[in-house]
Length: 563
Ligand code: SF4
Ligand code: FES
Image 1 (cartoon, rainbow, N blue to C red):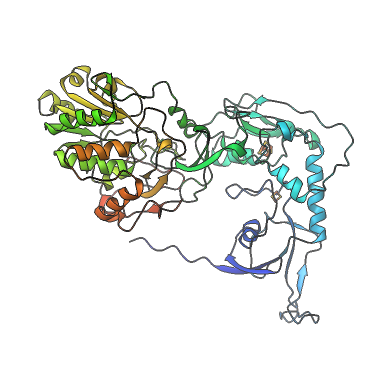
Image 2 (image 1 turned 60 degrees about the vertical axis):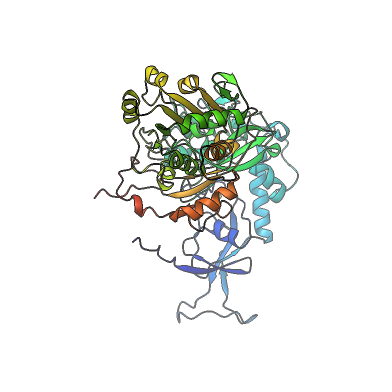
């Protein structure tokens, strides 16, 4: 049994007169946040090394006075309390960690003056191009100029002109005159992405962010520099000038490109997705995401998207397609190819269909080398879901060799394929011709082309669902945009198919499905979709401890030691 985490060593600090107990070593900016005090900052980032170069986080600091001779507290006769020895000059909050008795003042005239001075220096060479800057709406410089600036400029000289629209790499554009030299992008590239490509050239007002000679910011994590750039210096070449961020709706979702299950926010407007950014989860992805995860939404409007229900190659209504599919499935000798990309709810319904018609079930493995950061070796986001729901009982293979043999032997005459291309999983065109195929999925492929019944379904962005990542963490993804015309929610298709083949009659809404899931699956007992927190719920994995999962180490995951 794993040991509960050790209790943190708490210390009491005083911030603007409010006392709070925080774990020893908590950064002063974070400690202040806990009592609702904002310490403005640029270079500090909770997941990056501290460098202390912007000086925006200046605060007054003091410690309780102790008589050096007697080691006794020095009492202030004015109030009868222990005197505080305030340091004569302000200190950077980001470079200080909480210690017992630490006193912080963030709202004194001295600190106000310091912040106004720092803002004035930062704005000296910053262009006043907020109306046309792509960072508007999420620019820390703009927000803090309002909150902590002087409100006017005394600078009448010519501003520096720096490089415009520099392509640092295939996905990141730099407008250098907006850079406040916080070095977050440099530290991220070097320390997190392990790709030391960025640095400053020249000194003082002429400092310029640049790639090292002959190098590019081209790694698969390059767009995180855009997220953490506090100003509009680094922008996404794909997203810039497409949409003002305040017009966009934000929906919490999950990256489905591997079993890491990176937490994401999907930004959309009027049914169209514009970008995907990371959502902080300190147990899964910190505040990072791979560039490859940011473009997954392009699948929604890709040319390969299926948008017409078909029976025998002809457009059909859903009822007709369900009836036709049920006729094939009820004959017997059916194999179901489910998917490690489907949600827990869909896998649960798939298993129920299999039980109702006594069909064999399998999913297709999708293994590739992990990057040791946020892409794991299992490129299915929900292999664990298939295990937990009982859709599979052993780890899958990439090739459906057993199914191919069963088709050749005439033991399988119908295949229900759910979001998997049977051809890509090793079935030949002749084998596809030998069986009746019901295809339920989002994109066209050789399987949908060979299928007698095709039902186009929703992508992960168009529906609610849950996924179980490599840590057995159950996480939810929510509907960001409505399904494109002609497609049907997978749960609707599967519940109707289940009823049509004689299985239970279940409503397809997520709350009802979770009633069934929590009642029937032991490790999900007591859970509901609404009750799953935004950072997920870790399930027991004991039942699957003997399986040799393919994942290696990633950011917050270490595979169990091999026996
Ligand atoms: S480009 Fe942005 S993140 Fe990089 S140093 Fe300049 S302000 Fe900081
Ligand atoms: S945030 Fe502390 S010096 Fe920049």
